[in-house]
Length: 480
Image 1: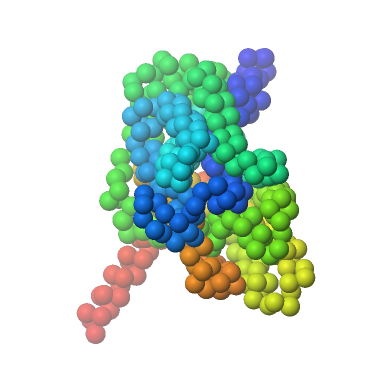
Image 2 (image 1 turned 60 degrees about the vertical axis):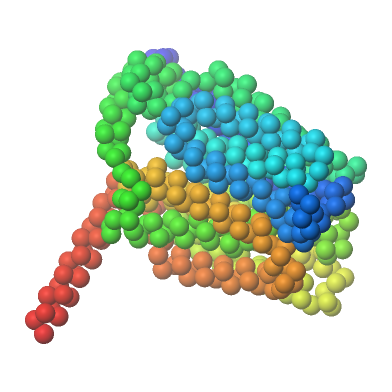
């Protein structure tokens, strides 16, 4: 094998791919950092601002706190909804650059916010950048990576998100002594600036270049990571894929696609309404209520972040060995048990002596079970279960719904605590997690070891069998 071929065999050894992967991972880090950093900052924001009025209107403080936290979700819904279309119009690389600028500006606005209203605006702007990143980052990476490493990088995206959350927790702890929440939020400008500076030197997606009629440019980009024969082969595949991608939103509701649409929507919503982001956004607040001081609660939250990263690594290593369903069902079962214990911790006053440590342990195990199951499996499943011609449209729909579920949970958590107490709120999430377990057991298929074409063919075959059975039933009924 020649040196040139060895450097361009698509195995991932080429240094260019490592650079691209590292920069694409920063999109996940922005996503994760924004998710985690607000949890610690809120402990001190409520001490700086009077959380009782917005724009002169008296509002319940817990609702205002929920709005501050969920403002990023509002922006992310907008970013995710328009991200795919803008990526097609502007190009993947340009939209990553735009998203990095938006995230930088949002972080700056939050860092210097003179009042609650400006802080909320900064969170929304920040969220738009996160929404763009959640769509275009994986898209760019999947289109520029060699096929042999494309699958593993889907799960790697979830790992970078959890790493971003952990980094945010560490930043929160580092600035906890002085309560410097402006520094906590403002440091989001650093990864945004690194992402922008790096992407300036990166090429555009070869697939997008080909779609724009720039075949020579697409060939040049592919030549940096593929051998000569692989370039011709992949250009042919891109051509065939583009030709087949004629699906619309209406095609999602075809009878043979509908079962997987239900699966995707269900997973998207259950990933959020089972309460994971109450931990990511409010872990210090939850632990502070058990008697921990601010700094201690932030340190315990770092431990939760470490567990999240470690168990995500475990999931990445296991997901192609054990399959998707076993990890998903085991994770949901464990989450249900931990939520039941958390509810009991806050319900039984006799546990007050070790309340903080028991709550911390339960939260860690809850996050661990999420990290090996519902966390990574959702993102992987939605990239596998939809037919090629509508995959982009379907993933756009379920991603927006996922952010909408995130918004719902982050906006309502404190209100639910006011109404039902912490024990009742965790038990409510436990019931929803149990429903998710039943849903996944009944409807989610196993996709381990199957090509995307095999999964699509199986969907069509089941639809044909179902149509035939319904036809036989109608025929039998008319004979009677």
